[in-house]
Length: 357
Image (cartoon, rainbow, N blue to C red; front, top):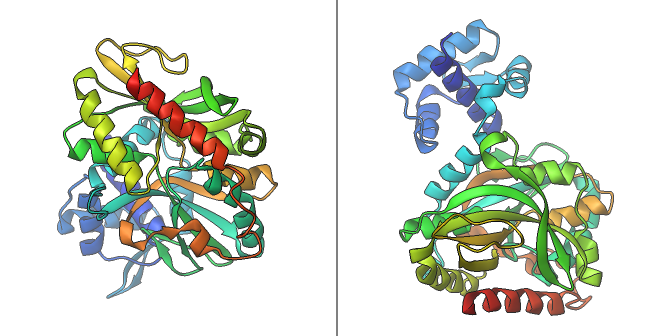
């Protein structure tokens, strides 16, 4: 099997896995086109015949199409290393392209991370995440939820789980791209917060050499201390580093203000032309930009000892499907007050300071 065919087979398997139900060649072909890999319905059938022969898929019925087998799921997990290289950056570019959100009209598709929590632990997870949303340690306070069997984007929530979608920082990439501002996504990392303000990156993983979203890796390794940042103004949070052309800085700042007015606060800091941001060197005639990680609220749940399965950079959803976190989860913790409001004010001041400089 040639590398090109194997790559397409792997994508077909991922589509079937994420669908959670059998799919026909026509739907698979349509989904592949959406993901930037156009393939005719006839060629999809050819690739499915190959996966059937290898036991990776099976016929679910004459009209129902194919379903992925256990062996097919294992094949995704053990895919060749070179197929996985640059996967993270490819997903960023794909999701940025699929983003259609207009911050002024508050309409369009926004990229999201999906987190799955055991149903019996979900209330505890919500209570653990709440302070991060109140503190503004998130891309947006808007979320979407789904019960077992329901969909979040293209993901079907498995039995015994509840899913929550949080806005991904790639929304900034997408909106800037639609307005003619190219963004170079460098790496995901961990930023040290001191006295409520970003100080420096202490860990980083380049997107170009990672098959896993860096945020997922850092969460699994329990390398964050988001709860300490909320309560003490000191600690480590998830963040991402980007660069934009220096000439686009003014336009980018205008777009960032529009995003904030629409409820999306993904930008942590904007630097000066060709000068380091949080001790990270910036290329000549470029401006560094730090985006806050969309999974910081989920870090709080992990730090509280609650296991969460994260599917970072996994889908786009309609902005109209998102609701404020406090409205989605009314409960005993809803009236605890804005413990993080002072920290959010500091973060807003930091952005304004970098803009004025």
